[in-house]
Image (cartoon, rainbow, N blue to C red):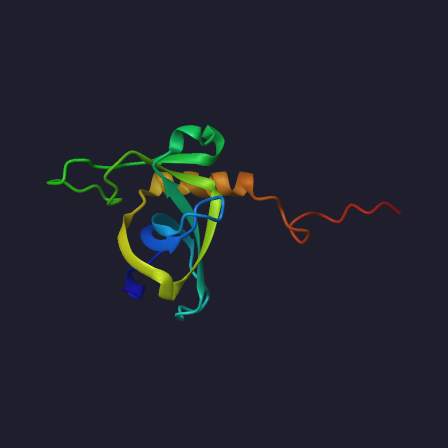
Length: 132
């Protein structure tokens, strides 16, 4: 299964909600892979939520779904859902339960853009502005 995991994969893992409670299997968009794919290595992910109405437009990306059980969406999602770009999750490779599907390229690019606009730059990303 590890071989089929790529950035943009929609995975299922056991994680907590945004408040650090209610642990359960949740869908996630895998954003980055660890440098070495070992069981204890962690992947950076964005949570997918079905309660997206309360998530600000600036930090959510709607994802395709297919409610008809006879058909399948590329994402594997069955209900209206959105990637919540402020709900970041670190998941050890060994804790990935399954790969559900794939995030379309346009949606994945939007997720990356929203992440870039959401996550503050680190000190190494900003220029040194010390005045002399």
